[in-house]
Amino acid sequence: MRAFPDGFLWGSSTSAYQIEGAHDADGKGPSVWDWIAHTDGAVENKDTGDVACDHYHRVDEDVALMQGLGLRAYRFSTAWTRVLPEGVGRVNEAGLDFYDRVVDGLMEAGIRPFLTLYHWDIPLALHRRGGWLNRDIADWFGEYASLIASRLGDRVQDWMTINEPQVFLNMGYSPQLRSNHEAGLTLDEKLLVIHNCLRAHGRGVQAIREHSKSEPRVGWAPVGVCNYPATDDPADIAAAKADTLGVNPAHYWNNTWYNDPIFFGHYPEDGLKAYEGKVPEIHPGDMELIAQPVDWLGINMYQGIAVKAGEKGPEHQLPFPPGHPRSRFAWPLTPEILRWGPRWLHERYQVPLYITENGYSSTDWVHLDGKVHDPQRIDFMRRYLHQLRKAIDDGADVRGYFHWSLFDNFEWAEGYDQRFGLVHVDFQNQTRTPKDSFSYYSEVIKTNGANL
Image (cartoon, rainbow, N blue to C red; front, side, top):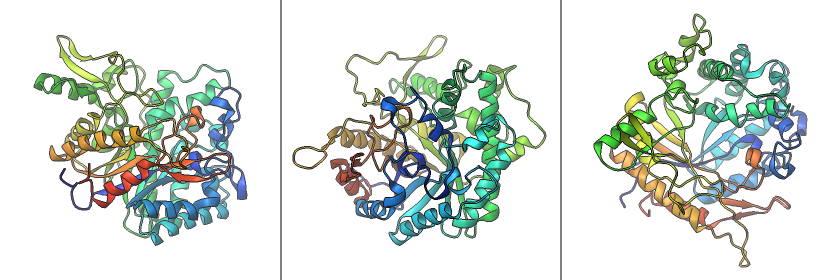
């Protein structure tokens, strides 16, 4: 196979709550996930992120693993409450010192840091003040972004404001309400959360640009929703593209309701029609704040649905055939999404793209030979990267790929049952064991994808 374009950036991703541990160390305040994880019934096996991968105490060891893998870039998030324990106001210098160590270690190892400001761990103190339902969240987030950019912006140039708003509405926000025996968010409230999230993103972009001491490159990382054509028939391709770029009134899982305001300064017309009567009040200046210029779009992509053209529009090809390959999460393998999703999103928004998450959950363990054999993950990676190469050949300006995840970690409501890592973590003693996929991905990086 031909190599990927020169300069293609090979990386891996993690997030703060999923790996750091040290949940109350050195002045850190509680986030909503510190609360959720200690709520009966919220997480499998009553697992918590209290220790997780203990990255907080093992950062030097972990950066050495990254260097051994050959990573060109590493995507991580900062924990809001590690630096601002109450979300605003009092600064925790010990938390900032930790992120200095992370960034300095990456720079010394020749690894380009990609910093995500928000990966679902809103400060509990701000949640109790209304959280994402409160318009003040944009200012709160701006204060946090300003602090991080001021401290790390002399070394970090690549920034993401917010990760997967589509998911934290359901997996990282609504559970807080359900765990309190409440009904969860209505569609009206969800649309308000999205609007406030977009406003916070815009304020974050402003803060990063204002306080960075180097020239920042700023994007964000929503879910890349992609429903791919069932065949190469032009009618199926057109139907899948329309489905991928449309808004379904039945739910909020889409691309354009989140990205059109950022890139075009307005919500999509079909979305306004679909959500008529539910759209929150748009105050003067809101859309201008949301539409701050960004340099690139990150997309997190795992699975999709095949689509055929039907008499009444796109038809989803469900269910999947019996025996269709699936991950431990029961997510179907649909590598075609990495061909069509980046292509269509690049055509619409005309900015560079990064695949900021893509990966496979399995049931990995250390074998009797002391190694972790994960051939399914290797096959997954090979299939998806083949399709990504096709997207680039089709004209999509994809600049890099970040495998999820570097480590087995705390997988939110699934606890430690799901293993996504290139590195196996024994959560009893914190032993790290690079898997076979670690070696495979290292060769992908060395050959710039020519070994696929």
